[in-house]
Image (cartoon, rainbow, N blue to C red):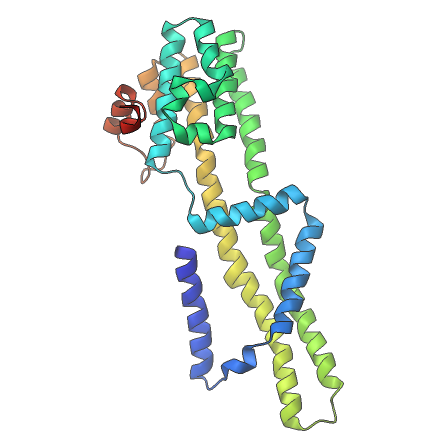
Length: 289
């Protein structure tokens, strides 16, 4: 919603200011200039990136428009799953724990947390490191180094759409100049026409420069900024898992280990201690009732 509101304000102020100066909106309607700039930018984007990144960029834009950041329910679900697993690690046999992590879709622990189970990558991340814990040979600092490496790799993959769209946006001003030059070439082909005709042709050519700058700084930059915010917040879930499991491996009881994970959440989004305690007693909230 913020993206739409901001875009309306931006376009409204640009067009309103132009009209207030005595400009005519019809002069700015140059679909072929937009075709040249948008087509060249999109073509370069496809040439520069693997198809997986192209598809993921579309997904990232959808997440940005929806503001698909983790909500309190997401945080409570992941903390609830971690608490249940750590509790069972202390009280149950290895075979019972393996039943949860080998088939999380049928695990009562994961079924109480649908937001975790829906995130296949996050579920696999949790199961992989709980499996390493029950093996018992790895030390906490070794697990931490492995987690950091995987988390950094995953974050780099998630940021590929951000970098790809940023590069495309950076190219738009230069492509706008190309469109303007083509418009000037067209105008020069009619150099014998009246000043009124030439003025219209040159004005249309300059719209290309304006559109290139507008697409870069008023469209692509805000979108990529929102993509980075959303995906960074989504990635925070992995940090919660890391800090919680490491605290458990270093000797903290499950209740205390959860605090290590909870404290990695931003103050404005962090669930209260009471909410976390309630989640420990009743995983999944009303869904588990």
